[in-house]
Amino acid sequence: MMTTTAVLAFPVEEKIKTECNNSARKHPCKINRTDALSISMVKEIISKVYIQRIIQPAIEAFDKILKATPEIVRPNRKFPRKKIKKKPPSMNYKQL
Image 1 (cartoon, one colour):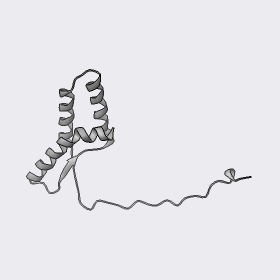
Image 2 (cartoon, rainbow, N blue to C red):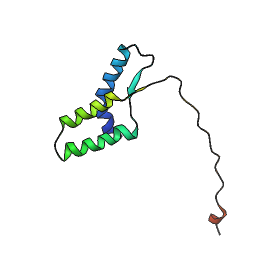
Image 3 (cartoon, one colour):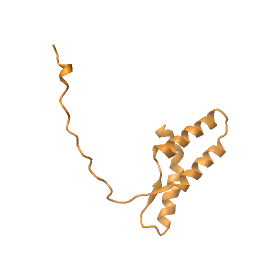
Image 4 (cartoon, one colour):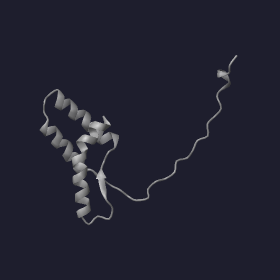
């Protein structure tokens, strides 16, 4: 599913990158690849493409939604995760 989403979203991502580079924005942009948006849209598109044979309107709707929801890429926005210490196994699983 992620591969199909990436294939369908690649042309839109290139357009958004060029538009953001040409505009007066402070930070670059990219498409919103959250599971709720792009993957769910691909699931709907696949059913329309393979079952109902509606190809062009489905892909145009997908492109329109991705163009409308770009994300700003902010530099140095990585935070370390807290490491959780492993607990020893329970005594219930002790060998006899």
